Image (tube, rainbow, N blue to C red; front, side, top):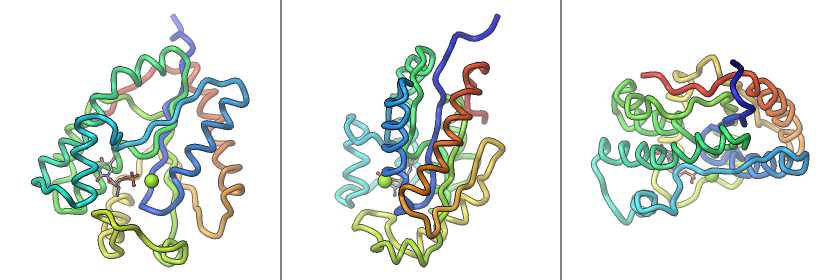
Length: 210
Ligand code: NYM
Ligand code: MG
């Protein structure tokens, strides 16, 4: 029997300052306007109890062992997993501003083992599409540089960039954000998202492998 109509799980990934949050928000507005139920989710979700710890950590008000904080970021996804599955199965497309790949890239950039990082996310809902936004170090700098949070340093971002490039998988679509206006990039992403939403209708929802 064919799976019931479901929404697509779409993830925006990339280094800091590439425009993920802006693009994710615009994609949700676009889908909603076209009568397709859609919801924006951010990871980390700083509103939960675990998310508040992560917020403190990112604002450098709280220290954690690197492994411990990796597991907190992962737990922050797990606490959302069942409601994500419910929404997807009821036909809502989810647009995620970061997900598991950020967890692996940022933690492994601190020296943690890649597979160890991946393992805590095994079993989470599998993205139908990962849109990886690419931007050179030079252009992120030109966009106004980084903020004050932990990890927002040029050297560290360069290491994260390397880790992301090792992570690239079959369901990734790399999109260059270089020299593009918000509207130009949005236009490109919409086409990819439309296709993903359409093809998710005939596929059952998968789960992240180990
Ligand atoms: N981050 C995000 C991680 O280190 N691990 C994770 O699992 C996730 C989802 O949090 N610099 C890092 C990447 C970002 C920071 O994200 C906060 P944002 O999108 O700036 O709120
Ligand atoms: Mg952001």
